[in-house]
Image (cartoon, rainbow, N blue to C red; front, side, top):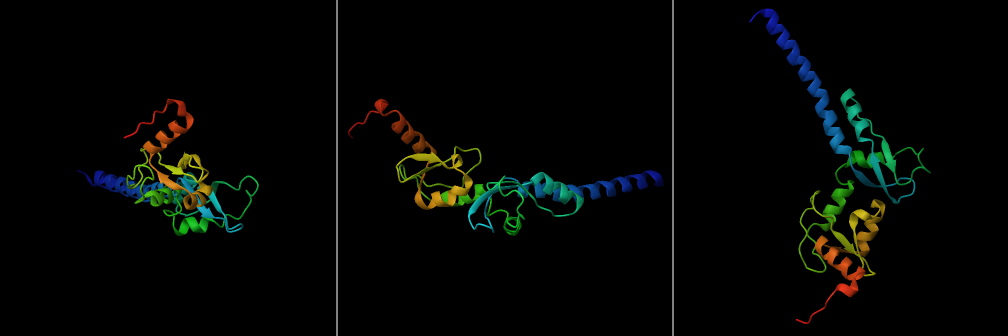
Length: 182
């Protein structure tokens, strides 16, 4: 190989290295900040659901800056011009404000109130578990507004998906259910 070829390979290697040094943090930023999050609004001190602009965070990370902005908030459009101080909570602990992690942590280790099956960590491709309310009706957790989850977790009990389907069928089609003595 000639000196010119070695020099060209070195330049390409350096360019690829510099490009990857920008791409990797951008990809990490995107995956870290995507998903619905639950925060405490600094203005009202209530639970609110927000989405971080993950694509913009990735773009800013590619450029070398760490800038976060909200993409959606449960208080918008009325309060869309707020200062977005809640982003400090997300920057401080991005994993523990993610709705999926909050729900998974709540279910983990608990037992279904009907079949007593113990919940393990929730999986994204599994069917969503449910909640049993004081009215004895079940509802899937992902059919609830995220900002209502902390309140529901204090008043509802965990139900596995199979028991949720069974109880829903019993409630909606009582004429089709046959009860037998053991």
